[in-house]
Image (tube, rainbow, N blue to C red; front, side, top):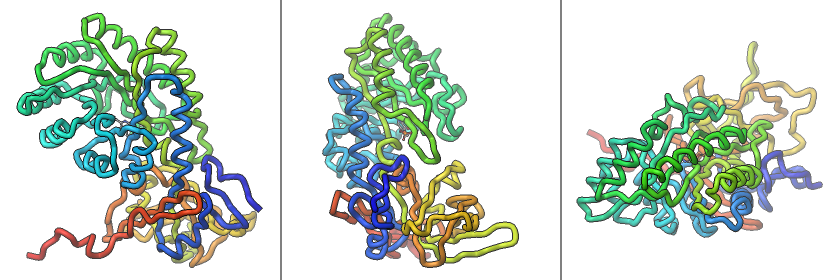
Length: 427
Ligand SMILES: *Cc1c(COP(=O)(O)O)cnc(C)c1O
């Protein structure tokens, strides 16, 4: 029997009682490649992208995948082939998108702490735009560009001071955040940038936060951005493109973010109403393109009942899945074998990893009917998991598989010990 896809997870479903990603059985993949194992659905990524593409049909718009959500080369390649540009935040990310075949003229460089070396490399590569985040950065970028006899295309990231109503660590558009230039300083900063010989002002941008599930913060931010564009253009500085950042949320735990196309229908209506309908638009979605395209398969090592708490100890840990420890984030956890879905008799367990930290948990108070040796899938693991993973406790970074219909491609081999020790030297 085929059940519908898991909530929020197109292309991930039980088939004959076993969990599948597209046409691939996760238990078979785990046996072949070991656990913990990240498995992604290419169809799910392209479906998420298609929602944005539908939203922008007939518009002059560029989607730049914010690659820090998942920067594995084959994932970048999927988006590059689908026509995406990229939003990058480091020189390392630049080299990755180039290696994945991206069109560098569609790459934009965000981040509050770009180094001179990163600026130089991005300029020489022909980057599409620098999203500049401070008045000091404007001066440095100008100096670097003048020394290369180039002009750096820039957009200034403004802080619209709207509350996206998300976790404080992923809220980025409020006055107290380190990101962007304060609303009040925007015009003066544009005037300064326009006067510098090494810079070419092309746009304006904002990014108000992540895992946003409401429309209102976007609509508010858009109004404030358009007010700024009007004042900047009134001062004689043309703004070719407006970049609204990323941040759209996904369904982790019954969250109900707007669909990308529905959200953009409203935003575009506002742009049209305010006379900006023909302006070039850019967006920088990350999580919403990959988050629910991936799962992390993990094996139960030990069941450890206790007086106060029961623990289910699995072979994935905070080094593989850092979001619970970092943001108290919720990931749904389901058995690969549908018959092990918890019935009324199931006990409640904390699902934890082997790392020596009490912060190493993956899920609290989960009803489970599994035993040692059984396998679980941690859902919504496509974004901010592998890209944030580490070798803490000298654990190897997990392997990754990208499923494309009937085919499964190993896109990253599990770390070997040699990978971990590379570059280290004894005294
Ligand atoms: C992280 C980030 C994004 C993407 O955010 P998501 O919530 O993953 O969509 C976009 N733009 C900038 C500047 C970012 O730092």
